[in-house]
Amino acid sequence: MNTDRHDDGTHAFAVRLMQHLVVPTFVLDAERRVIIWNHACERLTGVKAEEVLGTRNHWCAFYDNPRYCLADVLALGQPDELATLYAAHTEPSECGRGLRAENWCVMPRIGERLYLTIDTGPIFDDQGKLIAVVETLRDMTEQKQAQIALQNLAARDALTGIANRRSFDSALHLEWARAQRESQPVSLILADVDYFKRYNDNYGHPQGDDCLRQVAGAIAAAVYRPADLAARYGGEEFAIIMPNTNAAGALAVAERVGERIRTLCLPHAHSEVADHVTVSVGVATQLPVKGKDASSLIGDADTALYAAKRGGRNRFVAACGEADAPALPA
Image (cartoon, rainbow, N blue to C red; front, top):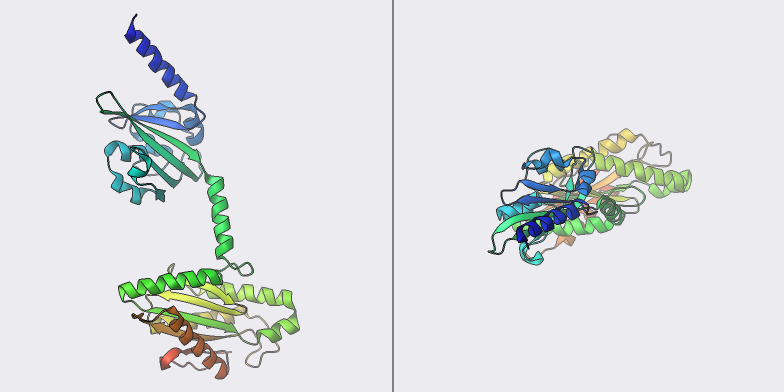
């Protein structure tokens, strides 16, 4: 019996089998050149096998710029690259000798952005030498989008679309802990719509809801930095968390909030401070120290807010005498 011919036939059958797998799959040799690019991989990426076979250009099916794919990381023995390359990944020991990761891929050829779950595993010869790496792909875009939608529902206020109280509490806890570690100040703004009950009673609840939506949008628009968070604190009250922000920076944001609310020009004939919707604002800044938690910052901002209300509304007041602004222009 000719064992070489038998081995060749077995190898050819295995290649044909892999070519027709329904799971998108490609295989690299030990030098990271593509030796198999199956039909399912062609359908997923829009890249034909003849374009990548014998090359190291498999990255171009998934990304705009050259970078390692998961199979490259495994072939090169560079698991330290995982954290910088992938949104989520396992440690090598969790998958034996293989690797698993998840990532958004731009898919240049088909013009879509897909979220792929990726598995890769090594193939060794009888002497334990690496001869190939197999990578399989699963399109999890719909599941990921559904997950993001659910997370947004949980994190966003249903009426206004900005962060909800749950998100606020979580973010403030995290930022307070970070500020303690890094010895950086944290600032907080609390803003309350002036005479909102009168607005609701006289214009109706649908109009009141629209007022809150517009006020929320204006407050969010006053926040320029990605690290800052605008949230609906409750009812007609809103909050802005500002990490690594001193009192002067927080007061500048408070002024912007007032300006943005004024530019809405929402009529409020039943207010005692202006003929349009206004807000009262409390501002607090603390450098977190051991023994204090974020509730002390909330308490300072709340005290400042009520001082603004007692002072005539339509103004901002800073805690601890940092600033006490006159009434905002009507």
